[in-house]
Image (cartoon, rainbow, N blue to C red; front, side, top):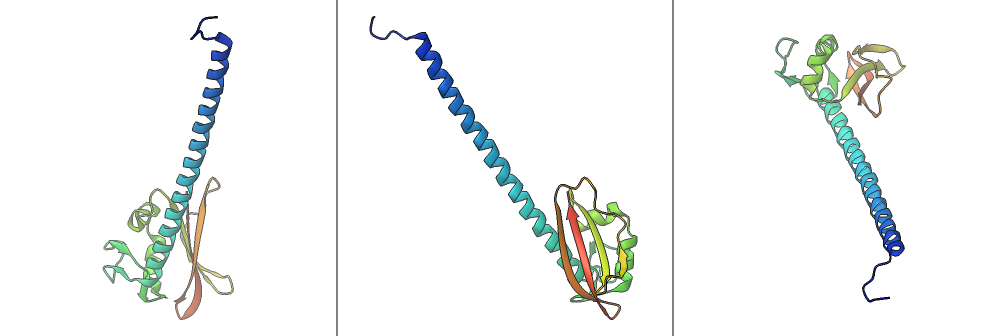
Length: 158
């Protein structure tokens, strides 16, 4: 046998081991990358849910005396955690696509409701959580509405 001669079987086995290892590394990398991206998207969605729900119950919106025709930023409070019944009515009667755009929640969907502490529904948006929702993030806040303490639920999903 001469020096430098390559055995076909050795070469085939070496290539098979190398490509198996390479494939394993690529698959692990894809799995880890997807997991990191999903976690980041979930954190962004949670932050957006909390930010929007806070803004709704703590700010009056722009302009402060907005109606469906004049609103540029939706806020439902006339004071911190005290909901304005007129603004809540305007909000739940607003078209879903318009309220979604004004809340800047794209590409997510949302649902909003106000319930008395005993569970009686006061008002809500008419878009229930989709059966095909893959991630659902709720934010529950308490506020004053018409002189009563209420539970305000804002839910986002994708």
